[in-house]
Image (cartoon, rainbow, N blue to C red; front, side, top):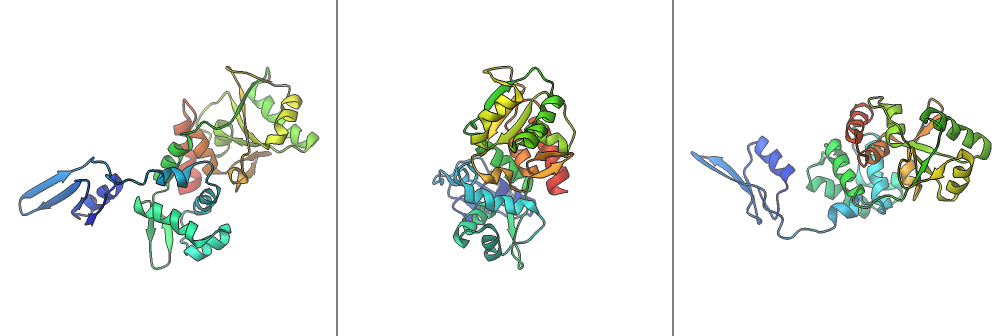
Length: 264
């Protein structure tokens, strides 16, 4: 196989299937006739600087919606036209996202269409790009314990109509209760945050927060949200992306939710 650049994942697939390769960066692998030749780790001499960032960054709303539709059921095979119609975007945008996934060997093409083949790798790379810029947040402190705070969020909806959506540790344990947590992570519409802070009796702090409020920058964050035991919770995908940004056992929680709710 000859290519301008062979990624680490593509190299691994080639080697697993006994297919030799080399690229313009000098990476190569060849075994035959008592000859073994291998060179890996050379960087792409002509990288597309913003390929992953432009697909995965928080501001890429259309790309995000395409990816979220793919992850709603990773076993589904899509025609580009059908996917563009479902999301409400151009075929060109869908082709761009799918082409990027294919290039990194994270998706496959069959006679029936395209499908995600490596959901875990996609989410981890997406999470890394997601974390390159700190999300806007309002860290707050309350004397109430976590269960009381979460109860007050339900009362907030009943009394004021303000919606809130659990994410991070507090959202993730609704899908996979594998960690203990002492901080509530929640999304709210930006215009509702000040009123919610007053209603909940919490105070913004620079350290020691036990509740973090994230403003809903766009509705893609709450696509496929669910009601679990009376609480509004973001989708398993969004929980994974947000949990990967958390210190402590965030990666463990993200992996548990991935296995239980997405890969299944």
